[in-house]
Amino acid sequence: MNSKKLVTAAVIASVYAVLTMAIAPFSYGLMQIRISEALTILPMFTPAAIPGLFIGCLIANIISPMGVIDMVLGSLATLLAAYGSYKLKNHKWIVHIPQI
Image 1: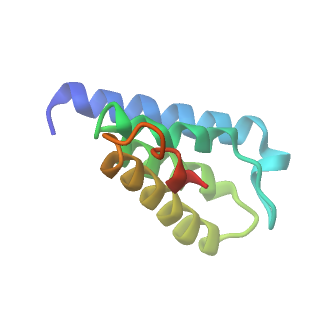
Image 2: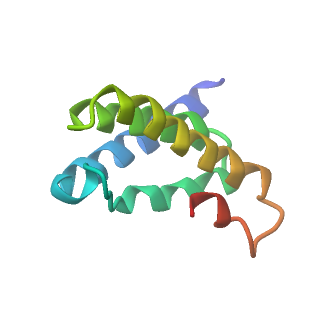
């Protein structure tokens, strides 16, 4: 991964983590409302968003009261949604489906 993609991934990771932690009362628990999950459409524009979103979610889930379960399963769910968006990038009308 070149330095431009690395910086892009790092910025996306930090934005995801900050957005999640900013609304912490809603972002954690059995029912989660995460505005940051809207970022999972970014792989449609750059594949560097895939690791960025995964790492951002992993960082945000470190403080989750759900513990390791949220760190592992939540981060994997975000990774799969980001990868799904990347694979559907040529289908503009259904690219948002993996996030749902």
